Amino acid sequence: MTANILIMLLERVIVHVDMDAFFASVEVLDNPELRGKPVIVGGSVSRGVVSAASYEARVFGVHSAMPMSQALRQCPRAVVLPGRMERYADVSAKIMTILGRHTPLLEQVSVDEAYLDLTNWLPEGVTPEQAAIEIRAEVREQTGLSCSIGVATGKAIAKMASDLKKPGGLVVVPPGEEAVFLAPLPIGRLRGVGDTTERKLRDLGIQTIGELANFPASLLQQFFGAAGHDLYALAHGIDDSPVVPERQAKSLGRETTFPTDIADRRILERTLLELADEVAERLRRHEMLASGVTLKLRYDNFTTLTRATTFTDPVDVADPLFRAACALLQKVNPTRPIRLIGVTAGPLMPASDRQLNLFDQSVTEKRRKLAGAVDAIKTRFGEEAITRARLAKDK
Image 1: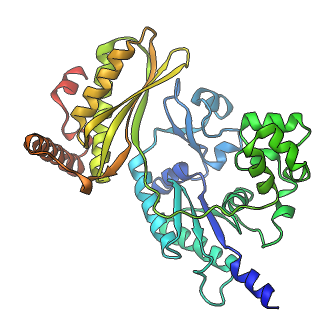
Image 2 (image 1 turned 45 degrees about the vertical axis):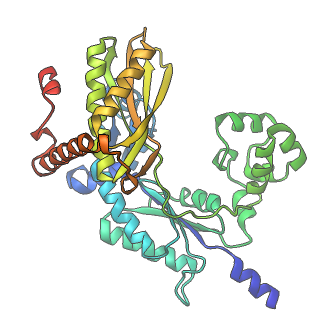
Image 3 (image 1 turned 180 degrees about the vertical axis):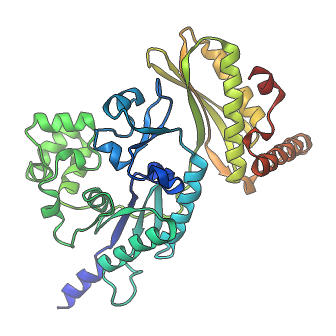
């Protein structure tokens, strides 16, 4: 009896909360006239991709990362919206605050999903299922949005469980029933199984997670190396990966896809300046510094190239980001037209760790004060209230 009680005490309670069609749902929340209509959030009709689709649009086979042109062929009556990342981030912060009231062990893995470890944080007499029901209700009541929840002893299974009964679903996998739960699921649902691995597994005659669990571990390691051991363990429901709270972003970036392919360096540099301004504003808002910058280019033939450089002193203003990105562009000297261009700042560090030498301090602080004043004007009067003279001339 004592051993059984000890085992029960050691069993983890991991909850995965996944918001339902998050971007599209926020748009419907803010504009109730969209309710019941197929809503797609994403890039331009001719060249963009789908970021999110409401469930009314998903009926037509629309899904994230699908080219927008294809999505509209499949769902021509869809309402297409460009997306408002600042709004989504604000709603996400409110959701994470709600989840954080249930446990300090909260790991946010994206803007619309998180893991909670409730193992030692369940109120007395409350079951994991009751706690999940309460969390789902709180999110609905306080944000007006729906979420789906999976509960299990490990993160991988909890995530798969949350995906099974969307939208608004709740799936609990009791301790000891992990393998039974996993067995009928297609192999592609298992964590770590991408397209290439899935093809290799299917070539071995493995279609379901149950078939993977019955495959000899030695052969899996022979075919997949160390990853074979992980696949075998997960197929048996073994997952002790911890919930890691306060995961810090390693980088912040912005990119844009041009309406038509661009070869004009003047336009490319103007776009880099716009992107650098946006990235720098986000750095200051999050009180972070960047110790480097990465330039991303995608050519007209969809070949993608990245180049990076580092700074002697970390920054949170646009000018050094822009100059470094332009220098990288000069080194690349693209010979083909550009379809997409992006700027990413990172690795990041807290702004409180800033150390300025006496020579640079005056100039840097003047730039930061000027940037802060611009931020304040945009916050009060809107993004179009103030802009650089160079960008104003080019528009």
